[in-house]
Amino acid sequence: MKPIRIAQIGIGHNHASATMDTLRRLPQFFDVVGVAEDDPAWLERRAGLESYRGLPFMSEEELLATNGLEAVCVEKDVPDNEAAALRCARRGLHVRMDKPGGEDYAAFRELVETQRRGGKAFQMAYMYRYNPAIRECIDMVRDSRLGDIFEIDCQMSTSHTDGYRRWLSNFKGGDMYIFGSHLIDLIVCMLGEPEKVVPHNKNSFPGVARCIDNGLAVLHYPRATCTVRTTSLEANGYHRRQLVVCGTGGTVEIKPLERPTKMSVAWRGPIPPWALDESSLPDARTWPDIKIEGGRYDAQLIDFARIVRGETENPFGYEHELAVERTLLRACGIDPAHS
Image 1 (cartoon, rainbow, N blue to C red):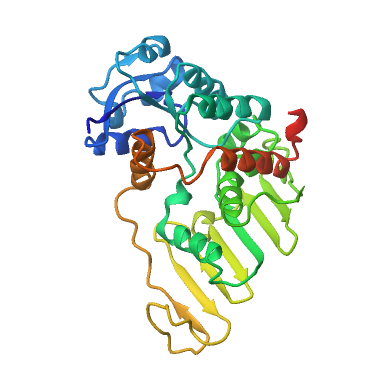
Image 2: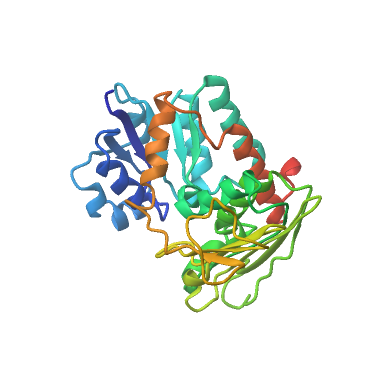
């Protein structure tokens, strides 16, 4: 099949250049027709990156009018992303939108429903969905290999500059909104939408930036409690990003989530017969480091291409995206019904 004619709308998102690098590395799947960015500041800062070398820059309207355009990756600065994605959806294009969804739930729902009505693909760019260790963990939960899940604890820490924390003040949820979204996506993948969400988010140093820089949200399920923690303040926080899933039959720990991904599994009782190998301990098994083939977004963008072509169904469909967005907003202290 011919490669999908695709464009990138915006270069202001922090993952924009990595997305473009991946698109250009997959010519069998994508034919990149160009880039649109109308913000002079972002053009000055990023248009000269190697990721965009040789690609035409044009206005959004010119790009969306490109002959044969089928799909877009929306990579504008986060406050502008949702509105741009909706403009693309109204043009009948398949849309991949970088995370998170906007703080206006009604607009996000309109975006998703526009894609549903038009039968068009919609993919949120939560990269951990396609991490092989996390996918294995999700499968273990869905297949009941860990028994009944009673607890999930996850952390997404970073050490940010004061300037970045001032940028976080654009959002009511601060770092819970930007980083907690990844973790909430995974919890909803495993357990569905929670019955209750209680945020405990704090601004630890208001003298520097009035943003949520130390977040905690508790997600309540009938038989499980899940905690989501985020912070912009932790030294070497990136390497303590973790996901711990506890069930009556075993516990999975993934720490760090990336670079490298490390995954361990502890079993309650004898090691199951399907285990790949055995540890010297009777009640625990540790997998070797998970090797992620290709780049961070390869598997996700290949899946997007196959969804657009109709070769596979989206494993993270419209209802999932809406459930993640509602849960995220509640974790940020925002009522989706009135946002």
